[in-house]
Length: 472
Image 1: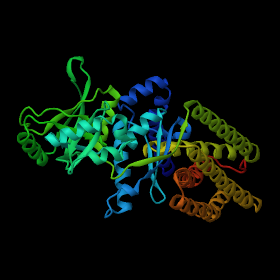
Image 2: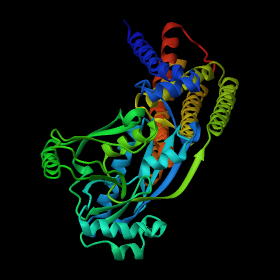
Image 3: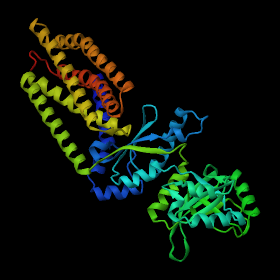
Image 4: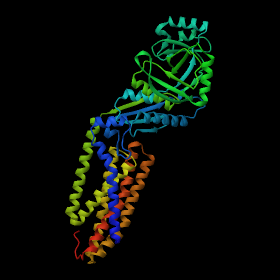
């Protein structure tokens, strides 16, 4: 095989590989939305796929603030924020959201974007729940029961929102705490938590819950905590142990016997979604402090579809106009440039699919700018070739000199743009980072297609035919 034949073989293989990477994306988005939603619920998304961002697909955007006043005084805020982000990410991953964006913003804020999730109430419940699980013994002493009776007489005055009222606090015995139940009952519990959710190994949804088969959350402790749980239940047979989540008593069952193995269940008249979300937050762990919702926006799927349609229309119209100009001004050489531009787009989308990138409107803008730089590189090359031909040089020599002398200008232009994009990526926020990444990848690919692909076409044509005049 000749040198050019080897180059063509390499180019063909890369093009076939790029088409293979894009096929799952094309096939996925050709499915009906309901079918995609069904497959996503089973996490049956293709491995390599170009994901659509919040502005294209629709979904939920939330800005949350970590309540640093509830942190341990010795805790480091930066460390707590990093832990909160990791816990939220674990919850969202288990919930099955494809390509979420969860990033820090400022000193104590967290940006959460969930593409495809438009049920904001469910999203807030999942992401914002502190999920502090505690196992506390019920205060069944005579003094405690008398105090609870007096507090019960206060009725709704026992609590102001989620806080114990002043009147009720005066009646609570020392070393005890008053809690609300999920069904509005009142519980007086011992002050020290016997075990916390930090000792849990796993939590999952099961069907149980009495005669009606209501969902329950089954949990299991880590091996080192299972022994402590067995000792706790063994020492308190016949007494009530309360299961408390975020200061709400979900149930307070009687310990009928020593529970070995470290397993148990949480009942609470759950719906299937409630039980699933509770199991998720218990598996992911408790947040180091509550997070408060500062801002929320919902982008509807129809708006995302309009954005996709408008973006595609603008891109295709712009691309068509550029190609028409290249064909009219550079004739056959312009056709070569158009082919290289098409390969450029193919390679860029394939790279994004391989790295499972998320395509957003800023990302589309980065792609368009990268295409413009690719066209600019071809213009520089063709103008240099024209200059060489005006000096009456042979066509083969003019093409070689045109590429060699245009390379420095192309390299400098792309390098300065890449450096600018690097700074945008380093100091920008989410959408700006997406623009920068797409631009950098697009520029690197355009360097290859503008120089390697078009030159290969010219070299193959000139080596196969005695050319006296070039259509440029």
